[in-house]
Image (cartoon, rainbow, N blue to C red):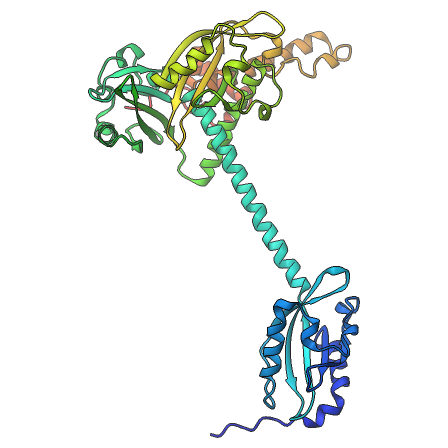
Length: 475
């Protein structure tokens, strides 16, 4: 079957201007009539472009009305419609417009007869460009939110690990435990004195020994850090273990860090981050992370109170010994010791005071060398009860204003209620939410603690589920 001949539109040539006006009003934002030399002889503007100065294009060559980078597109469009009856493909160009801005337009065209003018119709793309820009901005917003959350997660995770991770220093050749922190005893379910001096694998359950032994052997032979997740019996999750080889006076050592890894999904990840953040922000223990030479990277609110500072950002980069007024060099020696030995536990030091007597603290610190850059984590516990200005939330907050309006007996009941809740929360946070351990810290039975948790509305945070007691993580 033969192809029908292209229609002859010559009869429409005298009506080109009227056609342009009609098309601009009905089906497009702008229409142009262009003579055989490529000069614009007529402009029909729709409502969308009337303020853009397009009417001034009459008498100019079409290619001269667009930005230099898009001129080849106009010339290509004109070449394409040189054949009779051919409708050009759409091409997007930018026109300089009022106010120094650009007017993006997509054009298509057709020639009206052999020697007739070209009729070009265009659509204003500013609305589309605005939508695209909003989409790009929304994407950037989402990316910023994602990275902000990742940074917050990394921050809380580091601080949380410094305060809670089980840390052990092993002799690389024999795998004997040279030193371990208190969290190691809790995690392994054994007395700290029984762990130290023994081969680490003797303290592990049979289900975890093979994987951990292989990890340690690989680290010892390659000199590289490594990590694994180990599932153990009678647990609600897994154990994340990371090892880092290092040397002390040319003797090979292995730093092992272990932590619970209970999150199995995005919802639990979010909940875990929330609980982690709550612990970091509310724990009375001062937690600070420094670089390998003692420059502060991040700190929790308790450390800010201890250091008498209000803005964490201003602490970053300051040397920990200088910040704590290291008069006798004890803090500088501690930084050097943890950098070389990997772990120090319960060291008595003094916080120098600019406006009073020094305060004694007990310090535990560990090398944190799981990432690309090694850093040091410090946990400071006051050697005596915290002064009021260093304490956390004030149980009297808001109550002093009620004096004279509420009977004293009612105020005292509220103070006791707040104090009990705060102490229970602190015990739960210190023990990682293990109610049996928290009850022991508070000197009460798990059943009595469970009742108080319910009374204070803390059961929604996942506490009290194990009030009858929990087994150690490794069994």
